[in-house]
Image 1 (cartoon, rainbow, N blue to C red):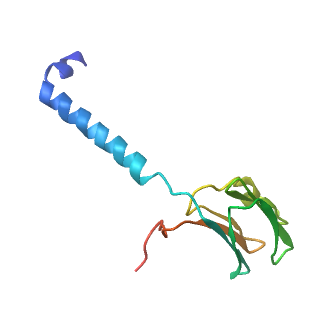
Image 2 (cartoon, rainbow, N blue to C red; image 1 turned 90 degrees about the horizontal axis):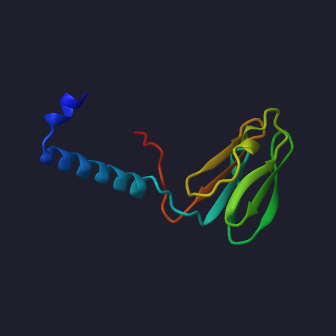
Length: 125
């Protein structure tokens, strides 16, 4: 193992160091999501409400199985309760950054955080 390090020159170490620095910088720059401005709540595939995150509140959203409770606190949002059997959307926890979404598929309710720019996970053509 030490024999391998003998063949690496000073310029090689410098190149690897600069490369690691650039990768770290790009990671923090590109994967740091922006803060959300509002939450878009959908029920049964249709827009139910668009609400600002500036005020703490609880919203009851009717779904196909019953009422889902959406909680907004300190510029974060989560689905506090849902009549679905597995509670995956409740376990999702607090959503903080634009682009995050929680789906309650059995109840057909979704909560999405949006910011000033629309972010895409993938593009279709």
